[in-house]
Length: 93
Image 1 (tube, rainbow, N blue to C red):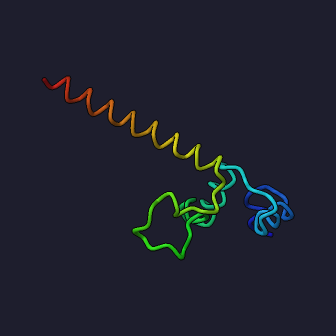
Image 2 (image 1 turned 120 degrees about the vertical axis):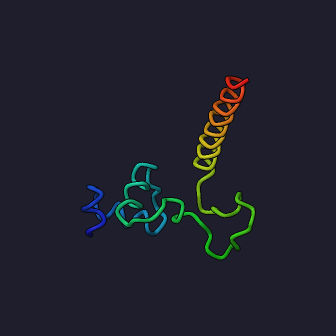
């Protein structure tokens, strides 16, 4: 009940998430993680996997649409970082 109160949502919605009937938005996942003082990825990590397993298989419960969104965000971040590094190198020489 407290979690629903802190998230400003219905207790029935939190219950539906807990039993897998509904899937929360990224914003709600981040809010819950913040309240619990954990990183959001902990909700999706398969605890039976070894820490050196393929990262694609670490989050088997994550919906495919969310996996695609995360991959796109990571790729964008890497591309931006790469461009910044290249720009710094080119500006030095």
